[in-house]
Length: 167
Image (cartoon, rainbow, N blue to C red; front, side):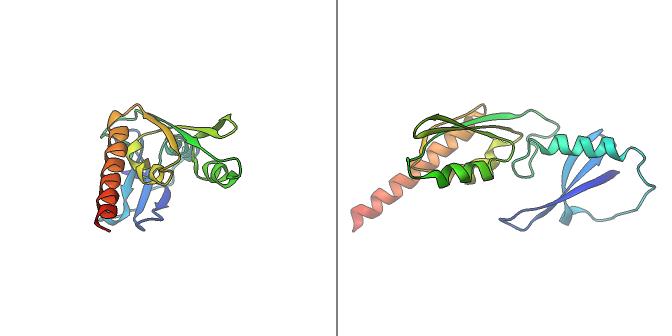
């Protein structure tokens, strides 16, 4: 049995997920709505405030809907250093707007650092890729995230170099 707390809808896929407190494992989790087969209303929850706090605390480290490997609540640390031109304040504004639980720090006149802790840093890759060409350094406590980013970048570079040679 779970206690529903919030519904999340992906802006990319439209997939709907339920953030709910799971009584059996005594913590919040994410559940795809299209996988729920049966719903049964139970009595009211006298400890709603505690469950709501647990849900908010859990959601602090979500980037998408994944909470990492099954049963884990370990977070992964991500740091991205970016070049931002002097006349490109819109990039900093975008970082501030989209940072979720992260922080944005100015290192010097044209360099900014974005840092965050999330359950599943793999989910951040599509967003991180949108800063391609500005990324000076990308680090993550999960090495596979950084490897994947640079492998994808190398494949893209090779693809475009091959196309340019064909012209």
